[in-house]
Amino acid sequence: MRASASPAVATLTLLIALNLLNYMDRYILPGEVSLIKSEFHATDQQMGALTTALFLLYMFTAPATGWLGDRFRRKPLIIAGAVLWSLATLGTAWVHDYWTLYIRHALVGVGEATFGIFAPAVLADFYPERDRNRILSIFYLAIPVGAALGYLAGGEMGSAWGWRRPFLVCAIPGLIIAALYGWLGREPVRGASDHVRATVSSATALGLFKNPAFLTATFGLAMLTFAMGGISAWMAEFLHRFAGLSVSGAGTVMGASLVVDGIIGTLAGGWLAQRWLRTNHRALYLLSFWSVALTLPCGVMLFFGPRAWAIPVLFITEFFLFLNTGPLNAAIVNSVSAPVRATAISLNLLFIHLFGDTFSPTIIGAISDRSNLRIGLGATLIFLVISASILWFGSRFAPLLDEVPAKPV
Image (cartoon, rainbow, N blue to C red; front, top):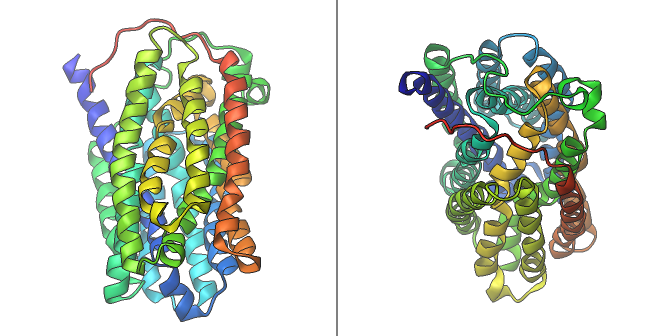
C-alpha cells in the first residue's frame, strides 16, 4: 500500500506547488492596485477589467483543455500549461502600458486553464470518493497561502521596488516545478478509484447538463465565486481607502487573514465535512450551505460597519468563506465519473467564471466609480444569498457514497 501511495503523494505535492504559484501570481495585482493605477492613470473599472481579461481566456480555453484531458495523457498537458503560464508571468518585466498589461494578464489565463482542470481529475484517480474531500482540502490550501503571498508580495515588494518585480517571483519557480513534475509526477489509471456506479448523467458529456448534483454544485459555486472574486480583487483597496491602511499595510493584513483563515477554515471545513459524511451523504452540500449562510451577516458588518470593525470582521468573514473549499470541490468531482471528469471540471470552471468572478471585479469597479467602493462590494451579498439557496436545494441530489477503505496520504 505504501509503495502505491508514494506516486500519489509526489503528484499531490507538486500539484499543490503549482497551484500555490498560480494563486500567488493571481493576487499580486489586487495587492498593488494603487501603484499600477497611478502609473497608467487607470480608472477602477479598468483595473477590474484586468481580472476580467484573465478569466475570459481562462473560461473559454477551459472546454477545449477539458476535452483534451479526457482523451490524452494529462501529465504533458499540465507541464505545457505551467510553462506557458510561467513565461507569460516572466513577460511582465516588459510591460509599460495598460493594454500590454491587459494582454499579459489574459495570456496567464490560458496556462491556468490546464493544471486547474487536470489536477482534481488526476487526484480523483488516485483516491476514492470518501477520501476526495480530505485530499482536495489539502490541495486547495494552496489557494489562501498563494493568495496571501501574492498580496504580501504586491504590497511590500511593489511599494519597495516597483509593481513589476513581484510578478517575477512566480515565473522561475513555475518553470522549476514544471520540470520536477515531468520527472516525478505520475499519470494514474482513469477511474481506478471510482466506486460510485456510473450513469448516463455522470459518465457522458451531454448527461452533465441533466445531472442535478453537478449543476447545483456548479452554480452554487458560481454565485459564491462572483462574491469571492469581487471581494478578493477589491478588499485590499477597500482597506486602503476606508480603513486608513497604507498600500503595504493593506496587503499585509490581507495576506495575514488569508493565511490564518485559509488554512484554519479550509482544514476545519474538510474535517467537519469528513465527519458529517459518516452519517449524512449530503454533508458536502450542507456544509457548503452553512459556510455561505454564515458569511452573509459578516459581510454586512464588514462593508457597512464602523471603520474600527473592518479588520477583525474581515478575519471572521474569510474563515466562514473558506469552510466550503474542500467539500464543495469534492461534491463536484464526486458528481461525475472518470470518462468525463476533466470535461466536467472544465465546464464547471467555464460556468463559475462566466457567471462569477470574470465580471464581478469590473462591475464592482464600475459601481465604485459611480458611488463608492462600499456600495460596490455590498452587491456581492446578493450573490451569497443566491449561492446558499442553490446549495441547500442541491443537497437532495448528493450521490450515495459506497464505503471504501481510505488510502493514506
